[in-house]
Image (spheres, rainbow, N blue to C red):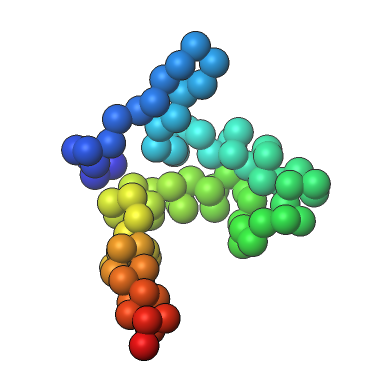
Length: 85
């Protein structure tokens, strides 16, 4: 996984926020496969292998970068430009 040098996990007594890892695929699959959760989301795949692949693809990008190589910052700047004109 490509490290994000600015990312620091957030850990409290009841919560730990960190980047997803391939070994998280089973538990992610469990909640994504729940019909009450899935109907409100746009996930293409909910199986563990698909989720593992998604995590691996995401691990090659910095947080906020899109699969096409653009960043969320450049998309937001573009939106601001068009909404301001």
